[in-house]
Length: 331
Image (cartoon, rainbow, N blue to C red):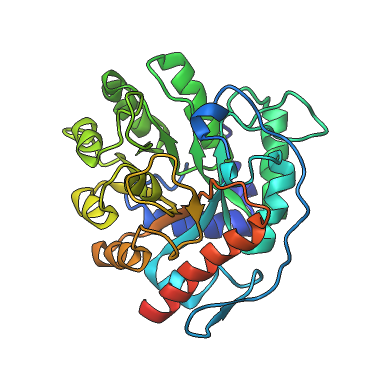
């Protein structure tokens, strides 16, 4: 990476980098189907855009797509609202990103198995993109007022492959790689986070024989003895699907929370429970946000809405409105 790169960084990128530095004190300033089913196939299709109507909260407060995700309350708390590309997985990122921007997100969490552009078949949002395509992607996001502060990457035991993932994340300007690496890889990954100045956040899926990090204690085990750059991407919906209390889980993870997947689900202890807008399910979302505030968490909170709803944009907008309204009322 050229040493004079910072001279070419746009105002937008500088602002987001400043916010990320504040929210991640350890960060270096220079730097439908389930997801598991999607790992081996790319979803594509069409959806008529849901209406951009203003959403009124239970107490009559309003938050519209133009303002949701950008409020004094969020700024005071140090919360940056992002969107996981998996939410809009039926669309390549170049189609999904304008939807995210319209809704009011400022951050996109890239996803390593989803497509980049319907006009460029075969290109996936990951380390296989050429330098030219990486720059094209970064410029496209910047033009929409978005940055890729988080990247959900395919991180495993192969050091060379992991290095490519971190190089891609760094070029995209990411502060955090979200992943589910094998326990034996964490010594190598701890060194890599220091080298690249990028945090690693361990993600939890619902309880299953294949999900090694479904319980917070399992995440804490791989964090033990590691630097502060190793932590968690807490997915509250998956905790509820696993029959766990998300507030108690957050208390267990205090001090290791790097980033967050905002998710509420309809049923407790049901791995296949469908997503619902925040505050309408079993995750006790007002209490979840209150616990994050108590801990003084500052960083990226990404909506990941897994229900492939006919009213997807409207339901995602409800999620933004819930967090924005809560922040404005409780910051």
